[in-house]
Length: 242
Image 1 (cartoon, rainbow, N blue to C red):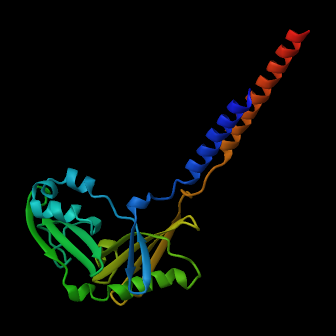
Image 2: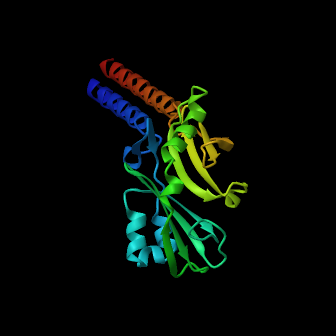
């Protein structure tokens, strides 16, 4: 194996390592950086393609389609039989659509027929209910900051009926955070005052961690092949000279 081939193989290995190390937990295009009060959130928007493809009104109705495809639309949840004010309503199948931008938090509740085929009503939550959004975010992130932890990626912020999440409060905020350094996903439930009612977490694979084993195997095989090829070449050259 000549010097040119060795340099080429080394370049391939180096490029492979750099590429694999450059793969982040989430693509940069997927993240939304937002400052809420004094806290910065790295938000991972929830895709709405499934919502549009599975429930016809979200594709056929212009208002709904524009709502779910808007860049400010970050999260959604099908909550079932609740009304515009998030109290029980057995006549509707309700979806909550969350939008967040520099002016604040907005949640629009969409009432469809029970078979999810017809739009019945749309209603944005009263601004009085969501006016303390900054304080709620501060309380949620303080939950981690108090333990000297960074809250990482925010994967959900939504306001839900209390009984939907089996709690006695009329309305409950639900946050989901991916703490990358700890390889944990935390779910926090807060009341309207910002008090944490309940929290839970699960261990998740470290998506940003890189397993060096395949690289070591690849490099080892490449080195073995190079050495073996060199030995064959030297033996052949020696035999030719003799």
